[in-house]
Length: 174
Image 1 (cartoon, rainbow, N blue to C red):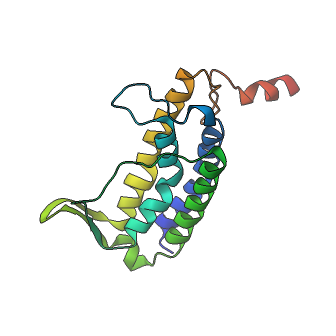
Image 2 (spheres, rainbow, N blue to C red):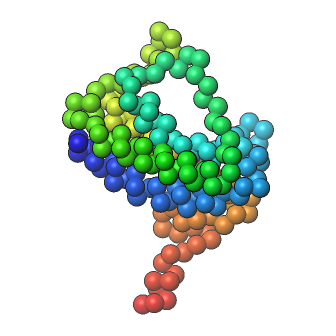
Image 3 (cartoon, one colour):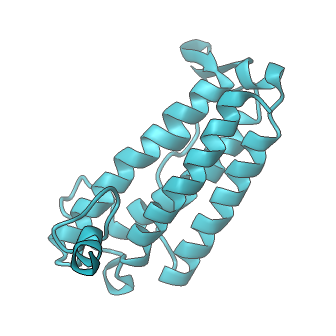
């Protein structure tokens, strides 16, 4: 396995627990809610966050994607249980994909086009970093804002949140 792929697998597993904590807070009763008419619904955004690592891994397995005619509209989550199952499967799929990359395939060019027009070409690992990781973190942050707007306690992602302080228990014990 390419060393960078190995590092991404470790990051994937570390971040998966934070993403799962966020997804566990998504209230099933509000899956159709959206903060603005142009925003995704809570269910669409949560499903997007849950499915991203696996979806991008499937895309990255090919040499590229012609986005002409591709529907990028996220599907809504069916339920809280389905959302968590999707997340767990997507993490497993992405870990398997990354673990299976050879030195050669990890750095092979991956190309996004719209018809004959090239949007970008990046190494396959670059695609994974950009879309399966950075893109995921962006949308996970949006999901945290949705939770705050719905008055759902925001879980810890890094450090503490306004609703949870993992260091308080350590300080009290010390």
